[in-house]
Image 1 (cartoon, rainbow, N blue to C red):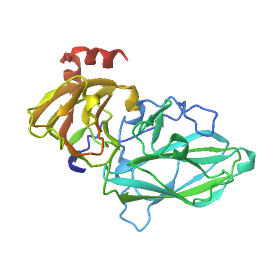
Image 2: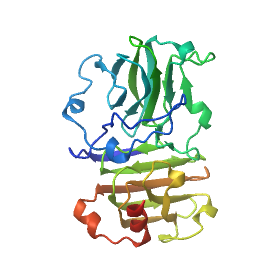
Image 3: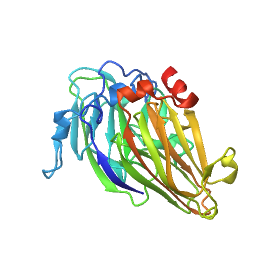
Image 4: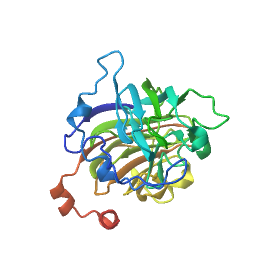
Length: 323
């Protein structure tokens, strides 16, 4: 898979977190109330300056934070912080490693630091359990677990996050975040509302999703499956029976298993298929049996506010706007 173009819009790029919305009592803090609008409301000037020009970029980590660059991030509690989360994001063709550099917390007193392989928002997970290669319990790595001796955790895709709870003022920890090239990227959350992408699954039995957390206009320019290359383009019901197909999904959450199916494609074609999807989250999802090399190419761009008010996109638009 590869990214061919990407554009950041100042008013809708990357992530800011509302300091009063995260809730939860468990060591995973899954039932937060972080919304897409809060998460992707802007990419401020401070973050744009966070480029890895120095040998190691360093800054404090906030209780609710978004990190899109490599560096070392230190959290020091000025007071009890019981419901904190940091979201990490890399380029689509990268994975993220989180390494513990210094930890001074009271594990026996209820403190914890847990790395999650993916993102959790409002109890929903990306990638979904259907699309992630690991069982759910293996995606959580708790520093305070007695059997956990791992000093570093690596994600399976371009996003990861850390939940943490600190009871005592003065307790602290430091994390080093690095990005690594992923030769076979699969599940991706796009940093941008505009771009082009080619998703390839080279004879592997897996599901891959490309998630665009914006309402977009999308053009699928090419779709090929090894077993149907000689047939004309068409979408059809019952694609799941073929074992190899592409889905376009839409909805308001990040869990692809809970999104509305817009259309399925299971016949190869070359030539544009154009759609406008007014959902908060638009997903291109490829399901592969592992018997063939599957490939889909598409481009996407943000729908402006006027288009969102005027487009009439069958029942999908009603579903997206009413949920």
